[in-house]
Image (cartoon, rainbow, N blue to C red; front, top):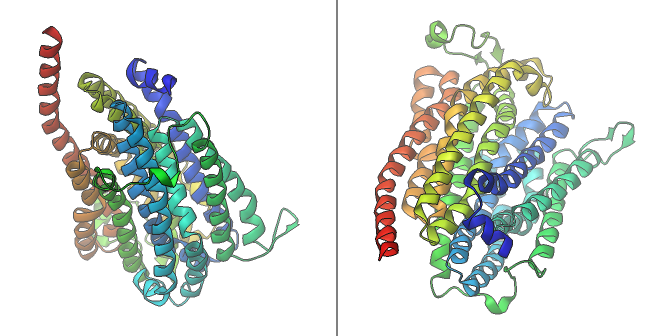
Length: 486
């Protein structure tokens, strides 16, 4: 812990940011790989309906992750601030509360999914060809609900303590297990090795087992002498601000996942209605030129193409998201320690890094769009549509990283209101009306461009709120400076 405090307080900002963010960014890349592995091997079945089924079922998986983020993001921010205040007893209270509350929530999710399966399948936009596959996938994901919630929560809890490398190790181990199990469980055979041929069921089972492995590694860290965290039930407490302190940040943070799920459900329902239509609205052809070749799409192709494109785009989003998550404990500690000058330096440097990353990744994706899509599918219709959706999604990549840095800055500082506003903007009150209006005006093209539009608006909101917050930081600097002079 002494080593972590040195990094929190005295290490130069660029070095401290990379020290915290690099393991988190690598963890997010591992998370992307985690998702891509499932997509890749399900794609190897050669059945677009199975791939589309996993895509439409993903929002329910995200709901479980959202539950984990209530305790993970909320607990991580709270723990970082408690460490900055040197209140180690509170750290233990928070860690224990998040563990047992997470287990309870995971079992609650299990029962809600299993006993409402038919309604859920209708809600998420399954078609006749995807409904059974989605049911098979969700059933096993539900069984692993407690593991998914705790794995998600403690990925962030451990980061909040400053042990980003341990968090990364747990994710990498889980991903490695997933990579090994996926071809065995999903396919009939792979590279001459016979498999179980379970299809989407196999993908779900492998995911659950991988989450369990990740939890085992996290618990090994928590139970070691190097951690101030604990799962000892004697430290479990909801009083003295523990419950409210976690929920104040955790609920807005998890709302991002919830709204992402709802927006995915709405998008899938809208896409599922396009069974035989031109891929691009003729109204936009003069502006977009050869954006899409105008070929018709059928069946589950729109849902599958969007799923492929989102999987591919996830790398860009998660790398920039990872940097934002990575600096949150650094922000929280220094804000708790009243070091506002260091907070501003961390934010400014992190924004610069994320913009550079966004521009670089955009160029690479434009150059290699087709080979990237081909990783997941070789279906000509899916590839044609998926490549052009990638072009649309990447239009916001150069600047969306700004929003991620500022959002996790608000979370790290315990600014629940600002975090809540951002959580409901990008995937909520901006995206949801945008996709409905743009779909009415421009058809399928409107659906495709709704997310980049929402991203741009969310960045403007984030910057505006942060500029307002700077006034408070400057006031704190003057107060600290006057006290020091006295």
